[in-house]
Length: 212
Image 1 (cartoon, rainbow, N blue to C red):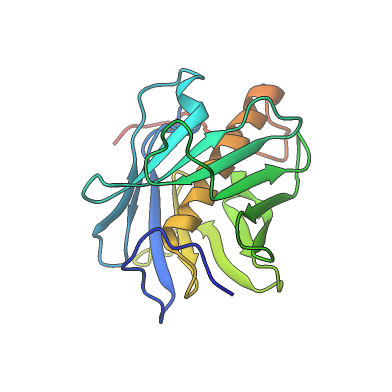
Image 2 (cartoon, one colour):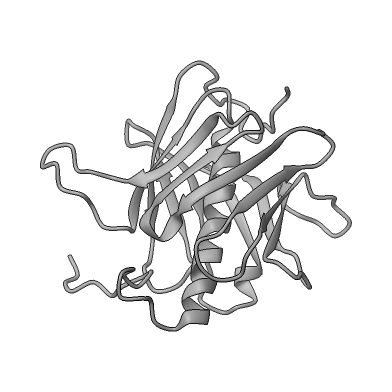
């Protein structure tokens, strides 16, 4: 089976361990920086404020600012659906994949369909607000995982603004980051709809007690 490749120098032999930093806690989709295990910048997503119109389209760039992919909310849509485009999206471009959510509020199923490649689809299970998700391919094999990050020197679990993205070869790490962007948007939509989180689930983006 072929795979979506957005970053040509993706390591196809070893698991890729990335650290994802959400650059602000106040709004969904308002920026990410992604680093490899050596602390080198790999990806970034810039934002231009909390305006809802800006949230309908997000651009993933490499460390040099080159556009790798664009994810765009499909409107109108009965379910939350996002489409992904290779590079910078222009009018008339056809998407290469779509991400669809099967329910509106609460724990739900997220599926990814790759166009022009029948049989290549993915299913995302878990809870992004808890930073605990696994991406499975059509054969039910895990290809990427989102999980909370632990400080290796103190064994203390870090805040939800910092988390790990582990990508198994030969899955493309930029493709995996596209899923993170959409999951973050879905999570933010939930927060907007619910206004307040249930008692057993902390608010998605709590204000920090202290700024460092």
